[in-house]
Image 1 (cartoon, rainbow, N blue to C red):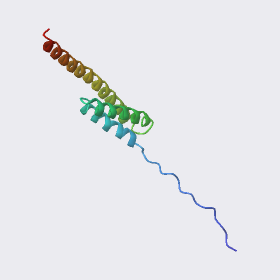
Image 2: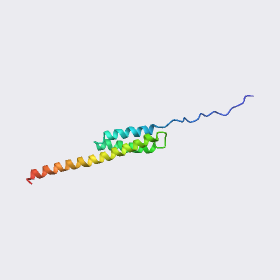
Image 3: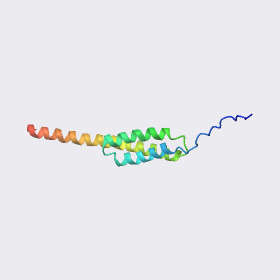
Image 4: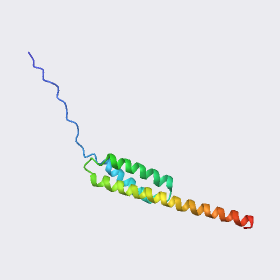
Length: 103
């Protein structure tokens, strides 16, 4: 009579799972480069912050924190540049309007 052995299950792979932290760091760097464009820099910053928060409990904690910081700086820089640019454009249009009216 043959003996039946219980099925052998393989253990779950134990990876570093540093991918979220690395992605946050890369997006933080890209958000600093693209902060002159609110759409590009702002979106990259928000995604970088989210991925950094999700990746903070992995082995790449330092990279996740660096990604969060760089993404936050990129987001603030994008907002500040947008406010300055929008103010300059609005001021330029207003001055042209006044000069065309003879004021």
